[in-house]
Length: 243
Image 1 (cartoon, rainbow, N blue to C red):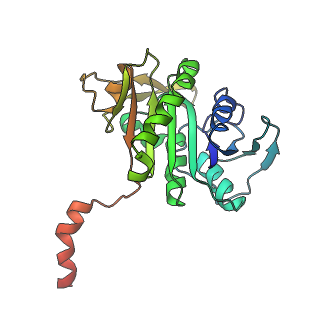
Image 2: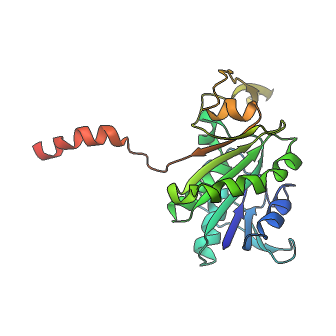
Image 3: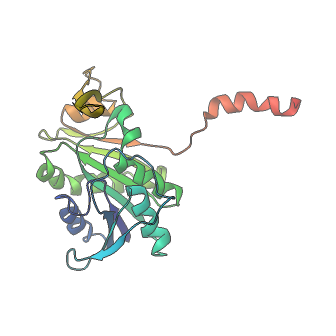
């Protein structure tokens, strides 16, 4: 199996080398990650100016590159730029959950949408900022769950959140409501920064990703890159015959 790994925390993120080391057990690994942190960059790509790309020393047996752009561009370089085929793209392990409505902002999740669009099955991995060791300890269990249940044969793209609490098990979930919001804080005249605050409303519903992850479950959410509201399209397409 050929595996491409990226993230949005940057090539020097603490989670990247342990994840690559783990992935080596399952196949040939290439790492392409941002030169600097790209959190919140969603599915953006750079089409205006050139981007710096460098091959970097990483870990034994893993070819690695830093890209001075977004996670989506890292995936694009790994697939289009290097002209390679992969069986799986893994994005993460992100330092911070990607839950609920907030996944639309996530560079970690943006990378797997890009991979899916390029025809490669993909999984995003995230955990709480202080829970890397716990997250790494769960990778074998999550991998076996994917293989045993043939999840990637059923859907090509998944968002996985690994709990910071002692793991109670694995839940298949849907996206919940808001997890974080922001205040605009003025740091100097006419200069503002957005400061995050948690707005999670615990409904104790283990079928949604926010509640499942926060209550100690691995949350696995199947995603779709299809933006069309299919049920409404099926109802409305009859109008095409009237035009």
